[in-house]
Image (cartoon, rainbow, N blue to C red; front, side, top):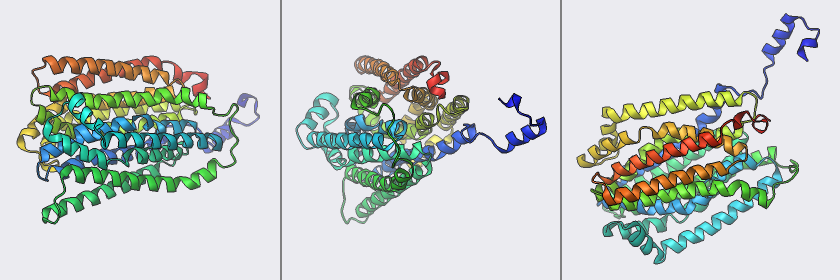
Length: 462
């Protein structure tokens, strides 16, 4: 005990001053780990507005914006749902070589199976059933949507590979490499979009806007995945090779119990996106809503992305000395700043500059999007809180609460969208966004309740 040492007070104070606990988590340390991840998420968030800006300047822009954002990309997101949480799983579980190999094996199997599923949907009559019978989108966007989905075939496997290895980098606090990988992805996306637009501008080869956008996204994610895999090799050699397996080792049953609730979370959430498209197709101003949706979704994703980045930071740091208080303080600050920024953006000329000059929308859609943006002003705040509460649950290995929260969100959203599709007299995107916000608030409240006191539990502090 320090109280029994013979050091005089001045010597003891000096010793503590020059030898701080290297494991102590401060708000500054949280910020250092979070910033590259937030930058990475924001760069990914720029991807959709950038794609929108290019496609909006090509022929039949409304058709191709709707085909990509509300059909092709929406279906591709649902297919990749089961592997989205590989990032959290890898961050939480890859503490030794045995666990690393087992999680990696799951990644390869899941990526292969989901790619086969993607091919089965994109190149068969299954797509017609989804687009016409389930989504009931306007006829003129069905074939462009099919082409976009076919060109997105490499998407799921690339995302699975990339997210698994990103989790390893984050666990060992190499988050700067994650940001570099996203920058490479954005550069590849810009290059392909620029080439496609130039070919059309100079009448060399006029590709459909949805083909230019989907090809750019596929090439970009493959480039990023290759870079992240290459960067992870020295981290595996330094931190995992030779590391003994835990006692007991990670078993298939334990992994399934941990990962299945996580896999269901994005799958259930992503099902809402095509459900939202189907609902908007049945409400007033359907074409305008479907064309505006990828633009609004892209901007909201960009601002919410700072909150997405917090989840893995919580998983990586929770349990270290000082982590709970530092992470909670940072979460509250992030929630306040991001929703405050979105409110200022929505009510100022910045929104018109974004939608008209940057996104290239016509005046009707500009006003449409500016009004819709105000409805989603709480989304960034509750996203930060969801990452905080969800990270606590993942660290405590109590992932069932995350699935329960998503089920609540889905129930609220499905009931709301179904009711609005039948009775709403408001433009579809307004009603859909209001319902998504209500569902998100309910989801956040449930996560808060399920994670109550876990941050101070012995497991969380060990």
